[in-house]
Length: 423
Image (cartoon, rainbow, N blue to C red; front, top):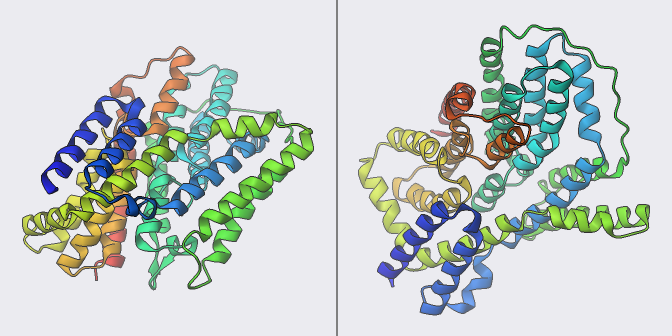
């Protein structure tokens, strides 16, 4: 069964690259074939799917949609505009704002939330919105790895490494990956100051958006607080974090139905959920369980270990910067889903902490998408918004910002993780 499993797995990847809008169908079809031909027994399918991950994604997306609809992000953005002395600092503040939001909200949702505010600001100032929207997109993609709920890849990492919310801040006596990401984010500020050094036009703002409902903001903060509290409990059920996110999302739905005396808001929220990603992950979980079941993962880990000749630093470097190169052109969700079990096996072969390899993977795979406009869903969303406004973004326009952003943030995170987790 090993050879058919490898052929099907490679074919799945090729089709996902060629048919990006049909990734979920490709993954689910491959999973079905795995079960039909016996690569993964039927009885192991349910257990192969990480329901905690899917529940976290579902619940968080519901909360995010209501949060966006409440207009609270617009209110915060307007406050940033009022304290900005010129266009350069508006761009920097909006970039940092999208990053902070993205540490707790899906990257694409962050762009959909913040970019329209950036477009409105640029229209008012009568300037091109291209640079600001690109900065918002790459910054939101950068910060996704900072917390447990910041991105799908973070949720997947937490499941693989048995991490809770607090572990992203402090893990096994060391500063967590949150600080590696934030160090990279801070390092991009002088990069932006240099790139936009000529944008010194003064700005003013008297607008004040009215927040329609504060409950989504309470739910947004509440589910984070509950995840933090849950981190302190040992031996809790594996689906605890998923249940927290789901319950908070359901409470938000019930409240909005009560408030509006109808179900229109619930329908809008449920339609906003990224079902494609959830089905993609469900299929990938089954496929990866299948190739693990026939021994492919262990063999791949051994090949990588042999290629590295026992040099942990070389392997770590290859994982980080190899992930940057791959994620510049390939969606990082299937890539990370595939690599996590490989690195778990590799860490056992090399007798090295899996956290070093896990964190290196996340740094490279999450930030690598910022190299190109097609490397991350957040970038695609931002470029799409600009296209609707009549602005065509060329590769070189995007990479003028994306490349220095990526290299700066990756190098800082790369050094930080090695310093604290190589020992």
